[in-house]
Length: 377
Image (cartoon, rainbow, N blue to C red):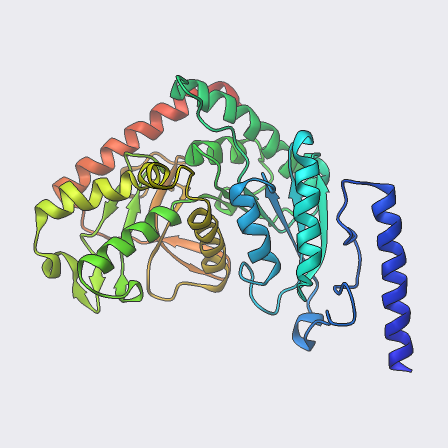
């Protein structure tokens, strides 16, 4: 009997998929609300996964370089865990929907056991409908000769509509990660235009900067990246960010003592992390898409699953800690547990660190001023 029932569901699903493909070229063969996760008899969920309702994960810029890297990792369980089914809401510009359709075909072809469905759309209201997580990757890149204020204004308008659509359609407990640059200020604009979603549910991505810094310290000390703890990125995801090793430990020992080279820290390490993105573009001719996608995965995963006593870096709405104006999205060292974060408190800030933090704070205040017309009064 079980075999007959399974065959019935399989043939019914194939029929429904065919209808969906005919009805809309902008839908994956996996239906939006389909209760069956498999694309065939080989795609049966584990008992633990089958007992959980799927989480809806939206990704903007889904057919772009970073989005393409993200979707497959989300579908495989790397974002929310190996026992959590997902439905992906892939959002793209109208002009990129054909490309997105090809990505969705590849997702079908992977036969991911945890993937319950894919929504393909250029409509933000549809894209954010009841989503639990939103990874905001899509943004306009800086063009040749474009002033930073122009970039902030253009992207700010995108994140006004994004914030409003999230506020109207998303689960009110949605967790939002802004990846598209200028990430901190884009996050500010989106959150201010989503007043019904708690500010603490928004963050901008500085995990990539954090991981870059961890890697450089591991290389310098001839250690593994997992040996490096309590590193911090302060401020903006820009060239003013401050990668701070003052409190960093390597195998339980102070990193600054192991390195014993203040000039290397200030003149090589800090500029290396600040300019790493540009160095990768110079080396490969393209931006750091894979590492950016990895950082988005890890920032979301660690927020959900927890960091223990170790720190990670996230740009979050300031509560006034360390003299940062309240509400400014500023990267802090944080600990995470159960999809919540806490800013690490009580850290001693030396004069050099204070100067670096002040510089990146000033940049973010200036950016906020540039987009003030996009913030609700």
